[in-house]
Image 1 (cartoon, rainbow, N blue to C red):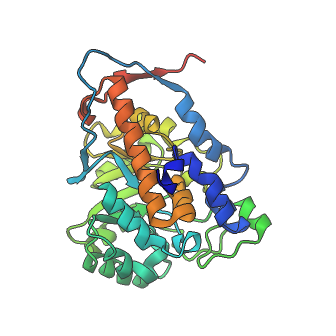
Image 2: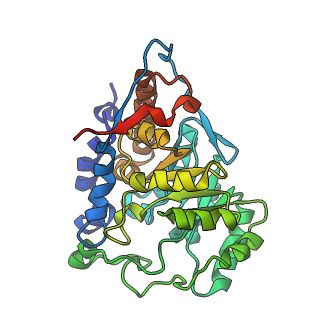
Length: 342
């Protein structure tokens, strides 16, 4: 038995992370906007669905593999972008990139790491997406996108829900100071970004897929399809932007119905268990993204912790598939879940 074996669920990393991190940065990782209603709602949403498992289907050893935008992954979970990982652990983003490679999945790299873009790009051979915030000075963004293309990233994941930063009261109370402002109006990013800007981003990133992250409505999903994007991530930014927004899981069916299979729909927010992944896929997601559990794991144990957290989520998902009677990811369909009776 190794020291990592004491982590049975990803929640087990949380107390170790709290002990390892300065209190203000732990609150930054944990916190959300406003009264943190949406932050809590991201978890509550999973309680509103229960499984309808099927049996005698030979699903004891399911195949968890799938693909996202043509990239094979070992199970339908991507590493969501989260900022300032070097403040959580000295190994930082390169450690997470190596852990994602070991897990056989995709890492979405936070735009706040442009200073270390090439280092992260070369930290592992695994596919990576670049999460994009557009600077008010578009020339800065163009230079970054040129480096993204040269660095071998396979997609740009444009975060659309950040015209201004959400009001994060935990950080205001703690006096946290970060390298890049992430709350309030005094941010570096373009608050006037519009649908017409997508063609400009496309033009700077030939050959890369364009993913929009932060969609929560059918109306915006249809605009995204009409704009020719390659995929959507249903997301409320981890509850860190507009408090009172719906959980990603709650908005997911509306977006899936609007898209009607024309492009992949992914979802994030509140993923903590393999059963969460299974519910999200049953409601139409092609894959999920998660960040906070991996932040805890990185803070607690570095790269080895992130590897262990991803292993836990994979094994839980595989177990849930088997118990639900799903032999392959393609067998995870809408009839697997029903609203909870309570």
